Image (cartoon, rainbow, N blue to C red):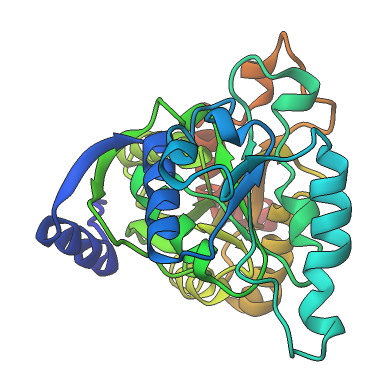
Length: 328
């Protein structure tokens, strides 16, 4: 069974062809988005740990020279105060406390996240589920340079506080054509990367590269996968996932974070409620293990293409197995 690109993806590709593009890696695209945001809004400021000299991953390089130290400056080295107290305890609740009279002034918190190959217990974690469980926050994760630019500009201009999680493994490894100048993608809209008929496969961030490979393996054995990038983890696009699962009858969800309490569980529960009578097999989660992230065994911890391919195959043979046991 062959797959074809989804019509919406074709329209996005056509738009990219019509607009001038330039090849960039992800950190360059992020830098470009912040530069445009500060050029188009004189009230925009950038502050954080080491951003004044360009940041640890060089995403803010040259911005202080261009916009001055009044608009680009360092903050104290205190992640707990920034991400814990300021974001979760205050920013997320600001609109609600004011009775919708005030917002957070287009506050976006950029943060590197996910496995990078040598991050160990602390620097390879994926905390999207923590923030998604905080009402008032939006959580966004790009998969490549073009989505990094488009989604970051959309996040900066959104009146609600947004957690923008940047996959560390993709900063330099992910390279692609990025529209030059103004480019914004809609938040809370999933993107269908492959259209298929047998099974729906959902992920976000760096995991999309893994899932694309798993879908190619599946295609080689005649399995047609519909691959969806969630893009906005919260509030997530449940309608797109539901529509796909009603068509395919099967769902695999994959992320780097531990399985228990991971955001895949929320997707699984919600889709089961919406699509129970359409499901041909139990929903499958392919995730990290419920242990601290192991430095020496990082490659074994991550849900790779083969683990996802095996999960896809198992969902397809479920009906055959069920029919066999019913016949006994």
